[in-house]
Length: 259
Ligand code: SAH
Image 1 (spheres, helix red, strand yellow):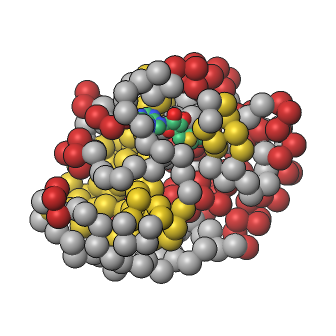
Image 2 (cartoon, helix red, strand yellow; image 1 turned 90 degrees about the horizontal axis):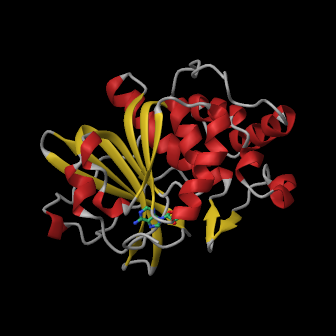
């Protein structure tokens, strides 16, 4: 996947955001140890290691993200009937018309969050808000990469299933919330990173408000200029917000309310 940022205006002016984008950075990231694998089942480690090798060969360079993906058992987040495909680079159904994103897209989004944090602050991720828990796979990865994770899901059956998937991993720093993530989650704000796994037409203002200074947000967003969804990255500095658009993606829609 191209690492170059393609920039063009989204309708962010309405939110009072400056349109100047930061240059896309591909800073080398120091090899670092991620949190202990304690509690993360190590079944299928060889298959996961091959998935990680493929991701690295395809240009995922963030060692922390690769190490997390080498630990978290993706197969235990999907139906047993789909487990054999869990380490292929493919999106898989998780019920109620939703999907778990393919590993390369998950790796891409997490790298964009993690590398920026390391490059700018020399520190790993602090407090992260995830919108769209789905099956809980990406939430598990985030809990390895960040100090604290709040993950919100609007569909109760998925929220409950994610809780079951995540229970054996015993990630004490991960909290699941049932609700409409378009409002963010004010009780734990501000966040050092916000990541959304569902695509909308506009950024919910609450997300911008709940970003700490120095925070980064990443979300799929419909771009009228391209007639497709793109990965949108927003950075907040002391001067305000700036954004960059990356490659086209295909995510399930960001919806209102709960069900
Ligand atoms: N990261 C997830 C991907 C799930 S797909 C995983 O690893 O499985 C996106 C999820 O976003 C779906 O479960 C969908 O129900 C949820 N979603 C969509 N709109 C939402 C909203 N407003 N608030 C919270 N979750 C939402």
